[in-house]
Length: 356
Image (cartoon, rainbow, N blue to C red; front, side):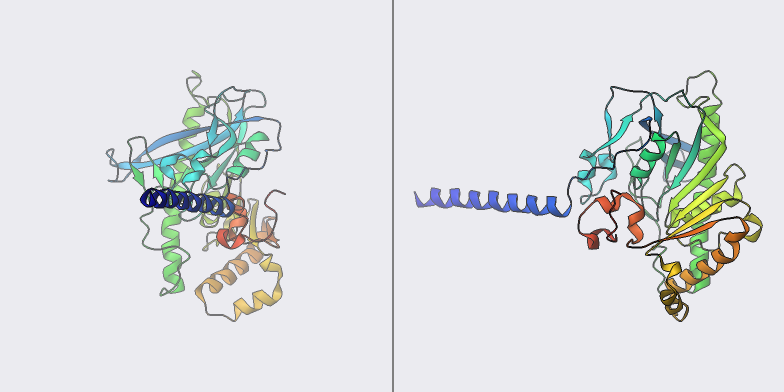
């Protein structure tokens, strides 16, 4: 009948439309693969819930600050399950496909003993970033014998899912990169307040894992496996500033790397005895034309760029530190996001090949 024909035709059009939408979605946001780790170790990963009983936070039934951290580490060969790139409850509607992507790390695999104790790298994500944003780095470092501890900073990182079912998003009033309507001093104060809170997170996490490592009853998976004489900090964007600040304030941390982040005055003359490295996108510190343009600008972001560059070029040589610029990159090239889509304008990445 004509009605049946119209119904069948309508269903057919819907199927074609749905198929076309799926094809476009897969082209724009394909199911990507992480680069293969280059080290000799198998990789394990474990998610750990911690409560800092010295700090209050009424968001939780405990009324104390709680954190979710993820650890990547050298592991024994395991027939276990490969970990998902991200837990489903910690995705958004746009990133929900991340929960079906597989990594190279085995969930809760037993930690390797050969080569232990292993040096530690503490990872701080970007402002409103997440602990898995640099999984490619964490996996590669673990494959070479490092233990990488990535912190989801509660109320800044997003989204973060806790064992009680609660999922917390950022409660920050605005982004640290939103400099409109604020003076330089106000922006510095805003950034340093959050930086101080995240440094306290880092110090607490290191102390918690030191306790785990000292459990010589071997009931803890980390017992006797962590090298607290060799700790470094690594961070992207705002997390880079946190990493430098942590390195200055905590004698346990021996070095730090800031990947394309402002330092907000975190570097002090008396603290430049530790090795530090700061990376920039597009090689801008070495492009004198761009530097001069920013020096002549009153834009708050450019003012911070120049402030940081002057601080770094004055202080880093005293510690033998490094400033590196990477041509053909943008801010998110220092994360996994370069793998998310072949369309760079969607990922805030430059044309540099992320698989090299």
